[in-house]
Amino acid sequence: METPVFGHAAVATPHHPASETGQRILIQGGNAIEAMIAMAATIAVTYPHMNGLGGDGFWLVADKARRVRAIQACGPAGSGATIKALRDLGHDEVPTRGALSALTVPGAVAGWQLAGEMARAFGGRLPLAMLLEDAIRHARDGIAVSPSQARVEATEIEALKAVPGFAGAYMPSGGAPKAGESLVQPALAGLLEQLAHAGLGDFYHGDAAREIAADLARAGAPVTREDLRRYEARLREPLSLTLPGATLHSLPPPSQGLATLITLGLAERLGLKRAGSFEHLHGLIEATKRAMAVRDREIADPALMTSDPTAFLTPGYLDREAAALSMTRAAATLVPSAKGDTVWMGAIDQDGLAVSFIQSIYWDYGSGLVLPKTGLLMHNRGAAFSLDARSPRALAPGRLPFHTLAPALAQFADGRVMPFGTMGGDAQPQILAQLFSRYRLGESLAKAVDAPRFVLTRDAAKRLVLRLEDRFDESLLNALDRAGHAIDIAADYADSFGHAGALVRHLRDGRVEAMHDPRADGGALGL
Image (cartoon, rainbow, N blue to C red; front, side):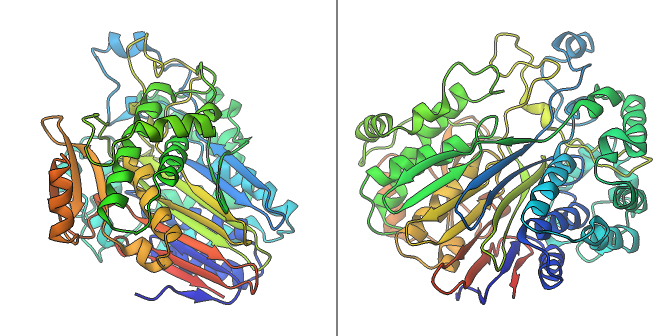
């Protein structure tokens, strides 16, 4: 498989309409951030099972001076989101669907707004109406249901059928959407037109906010108009890890980006030489276990954390962890197994501005709650909270939930810049480590993205299993089995192995390599 190469700018997304939007914005003179805002809006309409305006987003932006900025656009729990309120309703856990799972302020649109300010600082001049144009058209006129959307399990669709607004929005024929069917979202088109006219801040402060808050109240969701009014996306200092010849960046807590960096920091110390070998896979698997243990013990709302995330990225800590890792036997550490449906997209423009972006509503279709006045599909990120008051992830108004969203960006000593990321819920750090380490060990971008993957997860009996795509050599599977890994072979190119992508800009000639996952419905386009 050949890596697509473009002369000086490119975008990569999991859905072709979003890629086409990004390419159009670049042609019209937009910068990479403007292209990403436009793609984020388009894919919110065309890939509704994975993301939307009712979800959250995280950004990494690298400029030509190699400064990296991070945008955290995830909302806190609403003022009515208390442990007592949910327990009084008979819940021992936060519901995973319906209005009570939609208990955090959606942050994605505030992230677009903050990114728009950043875009203008880099010379961006395109009007918001132009950036939202494709999204409005697809919502108003309809878009063909993608193969990925059609693959959502029928049992999931049935479970969502009773959630207010879902069936009318996403089951127009009475059953699960089928690939190629037209999906029309007139109320969502109206919301986007309102934002194009009044500005993105209207989602939180204006007429749109009034309608959103009223519909949330009627549905019984604990997010108020005042919660919306108070919310702002934030600029954060990214977490960074220095490796020989490269520096890696990801988001700080409440994102799980720390786990990606720990995994790759440990992998570097294992002396891995050949991509796809037993040593390579086993080393990444064991590094993943140690990174996930830190993640699950430490990461929560950063205001509540007692440890400094950077302490886990020091050479001393990583050296000790790597030395304790066996390169011959599998450790019996359990890891969580939670799903997460998300979109990662990347963009690089002709000036070298690079963006790594992720947007999500958490599970397939999020909470399933569709607000009637605006067509807004709300996420179910509230399910990441605990109703145990002693937990570091305990629910309380104003608290940020733990987030699986973790875009990444690498800067190489030779001037290359590489935004990369994936969907995949808890498995995102594992998938990112596989992609980046394969590229670092000499595989082409296309091969690194296409290569068979593993996901360390739990089965129905809560046992630790190593799930692998069915393209690994038999001899490798036997070696992993002898090392004590409980192997489970799955279908090739399954959604459960993530939709990953990456771009690389070369400093010497400005050309951009770009690739998005064949497991999804998109690809790379550019100039």
